[in-house]
Each structure stands twice: as C-alpha cells, then as structure tokens.
Image (cartoon, rainbow over all chains, first blue to last red; front, side, top):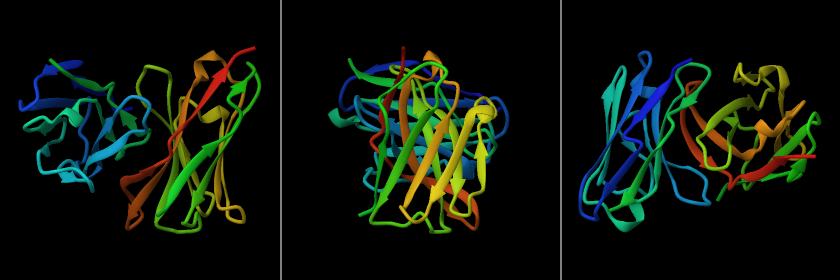
Length: 108
Length: 123
C-alpha cells in the first residue's frame, strides 16, 4: 500500500500569505494519478488538483500543484478567506487508492 | 447537472450489514466512462477508499475491507450499491459516493461527489 504523509499537520497563516503543503509517498507515484482535495466542515471533499498539476473547475490560478515520484506540493498563493480548509492528497495509480491524513490550513 | 445522492439507514447494529445506495440523477450509471466509487470518513478523521464498481459489474476493493464489501450497479434504477457486512463501531463514518472519470480505461479524476451520509454502528 502506498502511504501518503502530509506535512505540516496544521498551517496557520494570514490572508494574503502563501500556503505550501507537502505530500510524500512511501513509493513512487505516477504524476498522472496524484490529486488534491479541499474539504470544509460539513462538506464533501472537492477536487482541487488532478494529475499533479491540473486545476479542477472552479479553482483560480492561485492554486498550483507540482512534484514527481515521491514528493508532491500544493501551493496556494495570496490566501483568501474561503481557502481556509483541510486539504488531502490522494494517489490512485496503485491499488488500494490511498489518501494522506490531511493538512489543515487555518487563519492565524 | 449530474448529482449523486447517498441514502440508507443512519444506524446499524454491530454484526449486521450496512447497506447504502447512491442514486445518480441526470446521468447514467451505464456509461463506460466512469468508475463509481465509495469512500468513507470517520467523524473528525481522514478519508479511506472502500472500492469501486464499473457499469459492467467489475469491482475493485480495498484489501482491508475486501472480505466484507460488496458493490453493485443497478442499471434499471440508475444507482450504485454498497454492502458492508459484520460491522463494528469502527465502521461508523460518513460514506461518500463519487464518480471517477476514466481516460482510456484508467482513472483520471474524481469529478463528482455526493454529499455523504453518516452511518453510526451502535446497539
């Protein structure tokens, strides 16, 4: 099983700052099968980034994804109030598909 | 627009079988362009992939749950079903149905999620 480890667990930032979220895999993941999700309280996860760097519909270019093999990053520039949430990375290239434990981006 | 809606009992007794359905509105489960997948989230915790089913009936399950999971597609009712047997308190979670868009037969992106349904396991 591919274990995804996200860091940090919590990121405390102010609006306007940049959030850098890390996702490290226990073995190589094809960039095609790495995604990021945003989840707000009481809501289902929402796809933010797929195939490592492609933005999903509805997310502005402040959201960017990068990485390869075992190290992936989600960067959120110029944080807006609606960006504060929990973010999960996911790999779906190797069964079982797995998620990271999440990074909470909170308002400082 | 296509919507997914999970439904089923909110409370299940230990050792019994959890049964949920995911109704697809304004779309068809018969499309060969998607996997239909189930994901769960214990309250306050992270996400766990349970498995997926294809319109043909082929399935893939998480090995951690494989012995207890059954997924199926009902094309006449346009829904997807999840059954999880011998449940315990550890199966208490929000259960989500999601659609996975395929690209030449490979999963490409999880483009649509239901709102989820909370299932509690308790006597």
